[in-house]
Image (cartoon, rainbow, N blue to C red; front, top):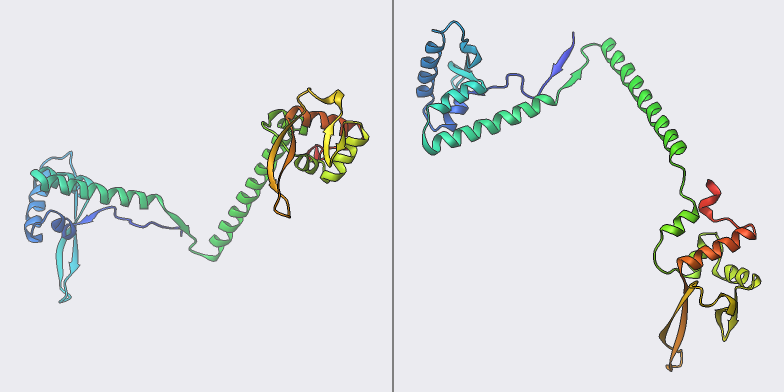
Length: 255
């Protein structure tokens, strides 16, 4: 037989707890509840157990005493008889309690009652896992088919700002030294006083931007150094040169 375990199966509050919440003697609350039940039962369209159901509890002596399990509607009925701050506070308390009970009730879990049921549950879970895995594979394939990878060319067009030759070289799995050598061989740049400078035909095209920075030599003498960085236009220019000599960007090798 299937067993469905929930955190609170009754979804009620005990009259002793309610008596404490409304700051009333339990015996007085029981008298009020029995009055409500009497009036409710006088109407054939109403059921008193929709509001209150009789129960018992054991005191320290082991003797059984009467109490009631009170539903949310029963609590509302009790709250309607209260006035002022006490009524507002009780309403807030029981609404909070029942909201927690309802939240717990949603957190149900199935407990197999027999070994056969456990095997059936395991088989169903395995089937569900396999279905989820298949759906995930289909989604992955769909993304691959309809959302092709961004090429290095697209990446350049979307990238703002300046970039160093070392960063550009890394995109092609090259060293800065190797890239500079290729640009030299392709007559893009040449070295002047230890600094790579563009040939005149490539100047004033917006390919690079240079900045002068202050440095301190090893002997303590102050000096300056020119740092040259490539613009995105220059980066695209390098990309075309490298493609011409058969060197692909790393990102394009997987497309």
